[in-house]
Image (cartoon, helix red, strand yellow):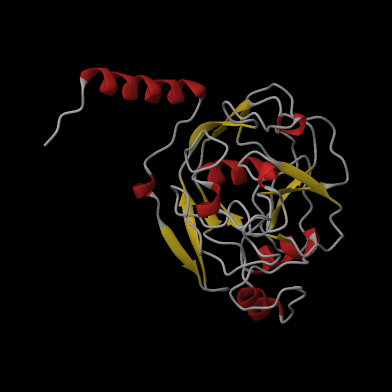
Length: 271
């Protein structure tokens, strides 16, 4: 068995220390648990608590001003999030409808408004993830803009052929989550805001009003480090029609919550 030269080992250890210093702190992926939500037959992954840098990734030259400034976010409690985007089969079984442009049971559902996404999540006992939760889960403990080579982890304009694809066909991140980047953009619960340079703990969207009587509520107190909210909602992850330039864990876009787009879907989360 060949030994690793001391100089190389020292460099590896130094690199690991530098990543820790950058603010990524999470348990190993093998400790993550999964469960099936019987109301929709989709798999959910338990994301452990931790701390990370939200926004522009280290050495990301493509980062936009909307992703700045990077700021420390602490997730003090674990949460569940869908292993994949909600599929058309699941959406049809729960709601009886399928507004998607590209048809296929195992394709992600798309052309969903923000209200419809949130209402679906409530019907299956879940909610939309916050933007901070989404990015933390998408990174899977990785501080880079991508959690693997782009063509291996995402369907985007360069390889999608102009359509969505079956979920879970690309490489998962270290938390076992599929399609966090590419395939479809994903609604999150937050209004679109600019970041400010403040640390945050369990950041919440600026406001929340339950759409369904008896639905799980999210406190309305704003602890998210942001300016006054706009009327637009945030989508994350990029999609099948985005150029490679726009595909990253920190990239964010804004859409009118009532509009339908054939590149926008969602996944649910829960505490």
